Length: 425
Image (tube, rainbow, N blue to C red; front, side):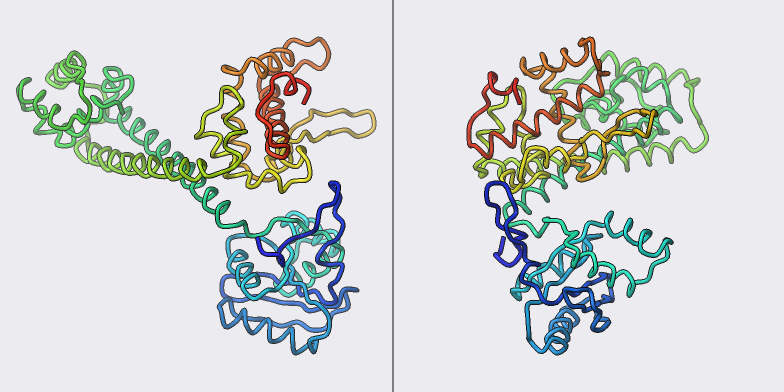
């Protein structure tokens, strides 16, 4: 990360200095795809001017020229923007390339401040640019900046892996629902219709009218031609053939030929997504192997390199956080109290931050519950203690938080997992 993008210098876990301490001018920017609305003000929130620029390289350069003209080159200028969507990263990269300092305002802070300042939800790009600048002057900023190349690479591979996983689940559910509509007995014969034998049968049934006219030997031969595995479930294939020959199979008969074509199209997409996921997994693991933190994450019993790589990808550099509680908040797993007077409501987690990090941590909790004796003892204690007994779901969230705290300690102090110390964290 370049020097100009650093939020502050840490000394004994305290923020000693921020880029705003030496700033004389703040430029609030409301980012859009085609246009950017800007508000230039001094550090005391006195508005100097408003202007707009195009969302292009020439437009970004016009912003720098306009700021230089209005400020006459006197004092340091800081750009402030809201990291919504993906356009802010392009502008942030431009600022870094041109050695310009910038800060980010959390979208939730902007949304809540808009209602507080104006007592309404009304918004315009010009007003939002002014509000973003005001919040920057108040130092309501976050540290998140464009990550270094390695951290961006491992994060993108982790997101690609999770995106393909989502696509795979979607098409699996689609194929199952189509089968339960047009030929529900197929699911009874093949409880896992997307196993190797089930997929081969589906490809033969794509030409449904011809398939039911064949004799048993030709039917089995065509299925073997489409089999990608080594073992064909002959008994199930013969049950399928007998069911088709009866002619009284359950399911919607109208449009059955077209429905099987839809099934095959979904199956083709599914296999493509599976290949892409395998490629993303391999690239993710290759990037993970280059990390200096791999040895510390892998030292935690019961975890797998793939899940550890996902956690590291969505987390980023563990040493860039002030404390272990920062990782818990980043994942949105921090408990949020709900009390007022004598009322004491149910405590839930914040669900803020990075939901994919929370999802990866959830996978970790299931692995640790089964394979790690330290976490299993902690999990069982939360379920059986007399005071403030937790449900299974709540106990797993507590295990996730414990895991994040341990990861922060291991990576910052560069020590392997120690069960004696882990029980106290």
